[in-house]
Amino acid sequence: MTSLLTNTAAMVALQTLNQINSSLNTTNNRVSTGLRIAQAQDSAAYWAIATTTASDNGALGAVTDALSIGISTLDVVYNGLETTRDSLQKMKELMVSARQPGVNRTNVSVELAGLITDMANKAGASVINEQNFLEVDMDTYNATKAVVASFERSAAGISISTIDLDISSIILVDTDSGVDGEGGILDKDRTTDSAGNVYGSGNTYQIDGLAPLVAAVTDSVADLAELEEMIDSVDQALVEVIAAQNTVGVNLARAESQKTFVDALMDANDRAVGSLIDANMEEESTKLRALQTQQQLSVESLSIANASAQNVLALFR
Image 1 (cartoon, rainbow, N blue to C red):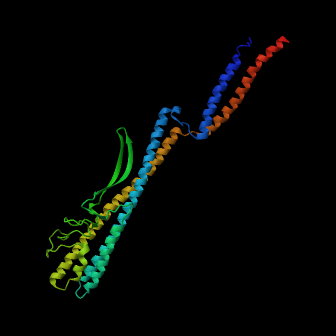
Image 2 (image 1 turned 90 degrees about the vertical axis):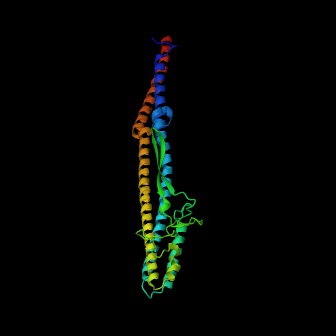
Image 3 (image 1 turned 180 degrees about the horizontal axis):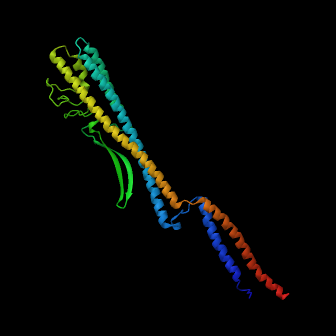
């Protein structure tokens, strides 16, 4: 039976066309954005996971920047200690040569003064981002220098890990001018030898004050004994600088390793987000072509259904 008031075939064809158009719009959006899940309504759970992970990746990007600055800072500190170690080695060699009777110790003293000034200048110049770990006021400083190393999310919440460096044992020059004295490797008081025994002369030595003392040394037994004590104090400072380099080097290696890990972690997070929300472009392009064909056929079907009512007119001719 054909009805002029109710065209069932046209209604079915129209419903089918609407469904195809809706699917076509969805596929078009995926093709144009490259995303299978572009907003929460597409899949609330996956969208939330992907958005949170992407947010964490932004925080990890800040961690990478912090690690880069930390690595640069530690590198500057290490280089400052390296030049100081080299200068202390030269001081040690000069003072050993001054032990030889007949050596012009005044000339040696001049060379020592140049090396001491050079060490102090390089300690003061070992600055990056307004940070100097080698020349510090030990009366007011914070001994722990932290480099942000990671951003972590767990069921208990978020946490930030750091790589901590205690600079109390690597400071070369203490700018503190108070009555408590200086505590840097180059300016602290040394009253005992490398074995822990009090110097026989009872003298106190500071590395930055040795030049005039060497100039005053004579060939007397007592003076030569004091010179040997001065050499011992330089050797102590050299050992301390080597230990400081080791401390900084370990933290530098940790920071570089952590930066490599964080970079890899960010890449893994990007892949995880992509697997959740990225569209499969091969699949979507195939689906798009099929839906376009279905749309054309559905339009044709609707046209046929609408034309069926016109056929009734032939019965009244």
